[in-house]
Length: 97
Image (cartoon, rainbow, N blue to C red; front, side):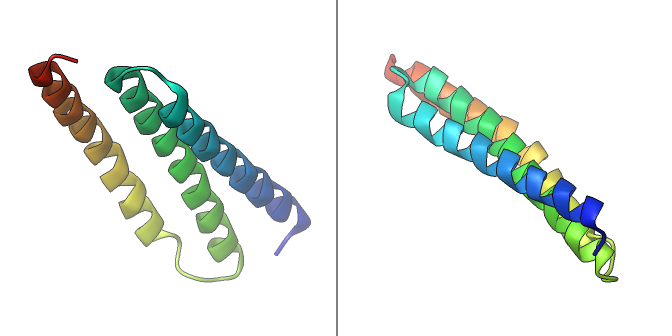
């Protein structure tokens, strides 16, 4: 693997891990359901996206098939995360939070 790709993949892994850590801290520290939901949804989507992009780069550089699975996972997460956030927000509103 080329040194430039290693640096880019490492940066994406660190960035993705940082987003996930910040999202987890937000879930633990924010006061109400809606702000916790926002932290988990946004940071989780960005973090997982960065990790999967790094995975695509590493496997493509090693000569494997070009990350179709990773793209499918990102697509599912991008489609499912807003729906899950909407369901959580509606449940919180019905409970009166």
